[in-house]
Length: 310
Ligand code: ADP
Ligand code: MG
View 1 (spheres, rainbow, N blue to C red):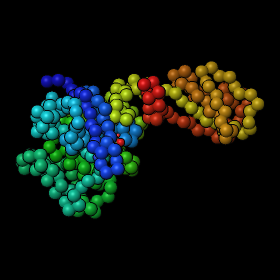
View 2: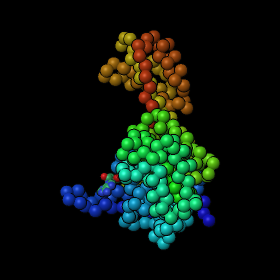
View 3: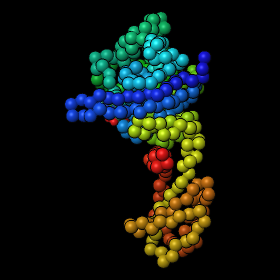
View 4: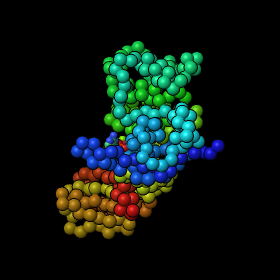
């Protein structure tokens, strides 16, 4: 038995041309392994191919070429076992409006052939905080509740691997926290391998041990979160001075940019100098600070950096 939960080789997906839409190469040959027991982040801008990759893992989209192994089972040779090993919470809120949450979990369990004696619908409803909505109709559930139900549905067959596609896009902070608590618990207490997509870097930073970044259907980075963010210690402090200064301070490790709106941007690396020292240098130069804000590097910067390098 290998220690990889997922092994992907040469994965390609071309969506066929439809009507006016031309054919689309959504995945252009992805090689990727995801270690067992990890919380793994799949990042990328909109349209990068994240959902396509995940939907292929889930068996919802048919790949054009390549090999996919899930929990050691080849998706083509052992479709049943590979499907049983993975639970997917999709990006789309596609719920049958005529089922109650409890009914939806039972139907899902039935689809996966989970015998009645092994079903844990009530436990799952409790876990996702829907126990008091067990018998409500899906169409009466809020967006957040639907999302939680989708998480529950992904868990009915006790999968080794849980995949979450943009689980927190557009959800409120409370639900986000709840989702992450659940996910952490599943990872820690049951050793479940978690794969999630997001375009929030801070979320990935907080949750994920390892990260892969895809862009335009290609893998452009794959590293531990620590290493990846380590490349990104660039910082910017933007100062709105009370008066336009005659001379600019000369600070080691800091590049100063005068912007058209009269603000001054101080670019530096967090590993070279602290924000405190930058601000001290500004004051020492006699510049009075009317307002100050920071510009954090974000995923955008990682992409820019990586796509430029490529
Ligand atoms: P992401 O999840 O990273 O935003 P997707 O996997 O949804 O990216 O989409 C990747 C590319 O494939 C996009 O250009 C998208 O428009 C296209 N695409 C996705 N699904 C389909 C589909 N069913 N038919 C045709 N093109 C699609
Ligand atoms: Mg998507």
